[in-house]
Image 1 (tube, each protein chain N blue to C red):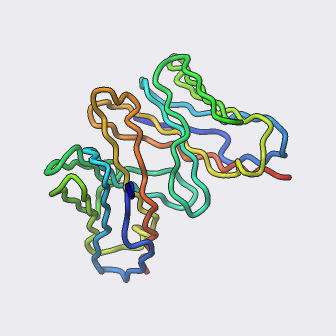
Image 2 (cartoon, rainbow over the protein chains, first blue to last red):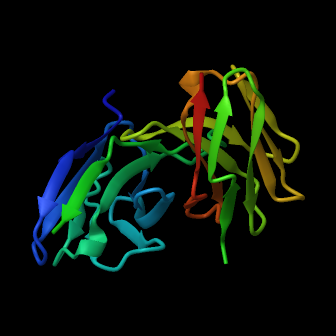
Length: 116
Length: 112
């Protein structure tokens, strides 16, 4: 299993441009999450999904959109990029369910985004 | 407000010494995670603590949970350079959606 994969690894955007950060997991996890990590800080939840077709906002959703059409994929869309969106973005997945009290979240390698 | 606070934020310690990182959280939770992050890398799960009094150990690291005090500790015994990293605690406050609230992290540097 590859686990959680993210593309691209690095990206530089100009103010006002748009892009999609890709996230794929091959563990058949139903829960998926997007976080951002600003320098020297902890992670903040942007959006999450409890299954295909179901998404909801996290702590810092403004300026982002998500969709979840399949169990495996959870792309994050940035419309009209702003310097405040310069950050490292992590995708994670988990499988809460019977016999899984730990519900550990598994993280992807991250995408480092700079908006100039 | 759902808050998770860690202290210290920065910790520089000599090899061979013992120290403790503290994680306080603002409201009831029965599940707490500890993660490790090396510079420029992703997060690696260390421990999951499920109930009051839970204690888990892996090598030189030991984590404990006191749900009544809303406090978890990560104790480092006889530190070695390889333990240099940033350590985060994270709490699930709402079991329906499994959202994690992270602390700001403790940057640990082990000096030879």
